[in-house]
Every structure is written in structure tokens, then in C-alpha cells.
Length: 241
Image 1 (spheres, helix red, strand yellow):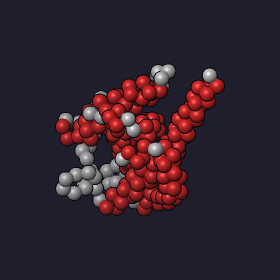
Image 2 (cartoon, rainbow, N blue to C red):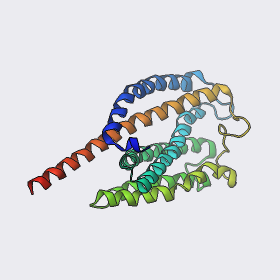
Image 3 (cartoon, helix red, strand yellow):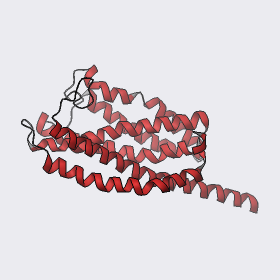
């Protein structure tokens, strides 16, 4: 793990993986959109409205996954002083907030024709909204201090403590009687969704994950270069002094 604490080594790894991730994103998104919009059937109850699922569900998956990435990265940064881990969490936070916003927006668009309302204070919806505010809180805390290290520590603590909301989001439909439907894909027995819809959903989830990885690598590279420039500027200022 500590071998990846070297920013220069991380930059080389990012540069090597970037073309592959970009290629996967460029391949998976057209395929996923074709399968979702043309290759999958309409639902017998929801009709064509069900196609919102192919954006909503991957966005919801990434909302939880990215926050978990931030929590693990923050733990590595706080416990082992891993410099790249802190920048990894910083790079992921705005992306997670964006995917969570997409999840909330598409959920509202899906809920209005199905439930007759844009929003209810349902356990699943409310916990996802809390997750969105946790992302915003992390971003605000990370930049709230003149000392970047203090901001990183404060934001890291929030990321770790706030992770308790992730299992609440995941299992809220099982723990409480909610308006939101139960899990259809990640079940212990078998997915409660027809393969004609399941496979397009899996491809779209892979496409969204590839897109996040691509954008995260771009942001991480920018964070690493910015951190390196600050170190160089500080060294030059000390030398001149």
C-alpha cells in the first residue's frame, strides 16, 4: 500500500491506465444506451417510463460506491498519513455529489408517474438526500481552512463518520416499510428482474463506473500536480527567504 504513496508513481499508473479506461467508457456507453433504449422491452406496468431505471439505478450505485471510496481513502490518510489517499477522496467528492444529484433527479422523474408525487419523505429517499448533504459537507470542510492539512483531516473525519449512512441507504427498504420498491438486483436468492432488462442495466452500471473512474483519474491527476506545484513554490519561497 505504501508504495502507492509516492505521487510520481501514482501519476505514472494513472497515465498508463487512462487510455484503457477511456476506451472502456467510449465502448460501454453507446452499447448500454442502445440496449437500454432499443434492446430492452418496456415494462408491462410502467411502460416506457421504466427506461429511467437505466440511469437512476447506476447513479444510485455510484452514489454509495463513491462515498465508500472516500471513507476508505480518508481512513488511509488519517491513520497511515497516506498523501495520495487524501487527494483521492478530494477528487472523488464532487463526482459523488454529481451522481447523487442525478440519482435524486431521476428518482423524482420516475416517482411522479409511478407514485403520483415528485418527492416523499420515504426512508430511501431521505437517506439518499442525507448522503448528498454529506458530500456537500465534505467539499465545504475540505476547503474551509487556510491550512489544507487541517481541512483534509476535518473532511476525512466527516467521510468516515458519515459512512454509517451508506448501509442505511442500501437496507432502508428492508428495515422499514417504505414506498420505494425493494432491491431487485442485489438479492440473496436471485434478481427479481428479467434478463432482458438485467443485462442492459448491468452494462449501464459498468459504463457509469467506467465514467466515474475516468473522471476521478483526471481529477486525481490535477490534484497531484497542484499539490506538487505548491510544494515547489513553498521550497522556492524558503530558498529566497
